[in-house]
Length: 215
Image (cartoon, rainbow, N blue to C red; front, top):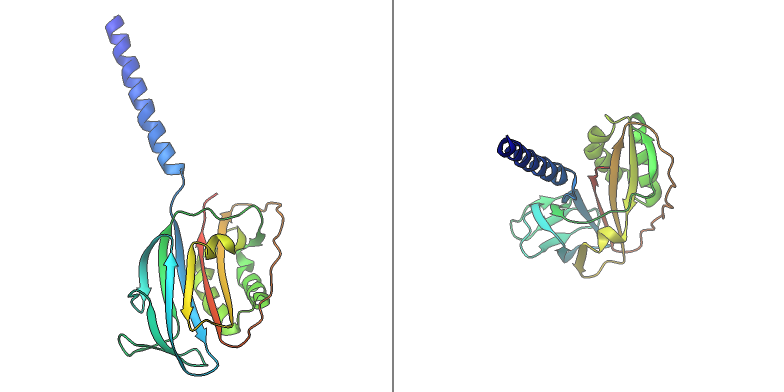
């Protein structure tokens, strides 16, 4: 009888270890995907440019193909001609996975159904043009408006330190908008961040992207 009891105890311990390992794996820190960062280039005149991305993570997709950088001819209206294939592009696109912790101690709590209006207002205030923020909204709206609420923040140093841009010749002004959001079942009270406005001056570079985080 004692042998049987010991056997069952051992079995229960093993099962407990397996369950704990599974739960711990499922709720632990996960890699964060940087979804669709796109880079717009607006020089004052037609110019050849090199754009390099120093990314603290793994690039999973680029368009046009990233080959130790992008070499393009840029025009004032944002049109790009990629040197490696001779094709025209509207912007440079990349996605990647990285292990980074973003600040969600502050943010905007927005109803899912009010996402479009919120993004129009906040992105316009940040300095994006209607063309730029409309492209942002078209990508993110289907993912966000289905939630009851979203906790939304815009990252600065945590993002730019882990995805550094090197552009030659150097631009006069650059804005990098990276949105992080968490779906919420109900409204919460949280401090709202201060949003800075961006002024375009001379050769301007604009980038936007984002990711969904889990609570």
